[in-house]
Image 1 (cartoon, helix red, strand yellow):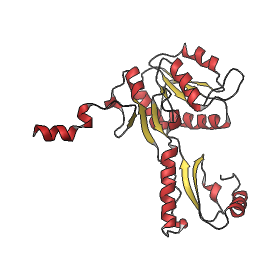
Image 2 (cartoon, one colour):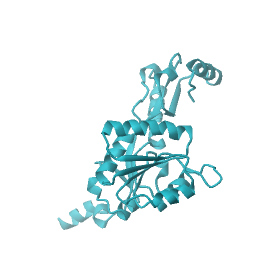
Image 3 (tube, rainbow, N blue to C red):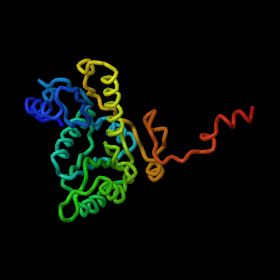
Image 4 (cartoon, rainbow, N blue to C red):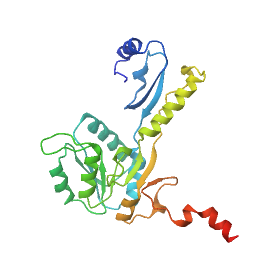
Length: 247
């Protein structure tokens, strides 16, 4: 973990790892100051693609409102700043309705105000009636179940809970990128010649069941999107064999 103090980070690194190369992954809100003065360090930032996800959401949903739901944590508030910047850059005239520190009861009440044509974005988790944070999968399931509009997210760990998806930060992809860096180091590349990956390896991921639920045409999704829970037709499974038999 990189501290906000590079000097402190260097002390921790030397104490724990010594002079060996160090590769980090999943660092949120990365800034170059985090690695100033550190030696033998590279890694993968976790960058959230709010802008592309909102741009797609606006092409699919024509409602007047954007509903942003979160849990009130520091991460949720910092992500909200990024969301607001993305909306400004897109020049959106839609009304952003922000609800942080949301409980299950709040979600039910908010859902009554949401139009099926609106954009709903889950920026973090939500809380139960006693104020405790819910696991992400539980939060995603509750919000997706209650909302009359598709729910967009920016993390792959929300998938298979009933949310639609978006351009998602993927722990798997970040790990694979960090693994490729590790392999280069093991093969003899000096770590100072391996730059920090600033552009997070995010992917477009969507849930087939949610596409069907809201009757969203797959052709409107970005090219190369990953579709989860997709039912494969006989043609798609055995295309080569069918062509060979016909010939």
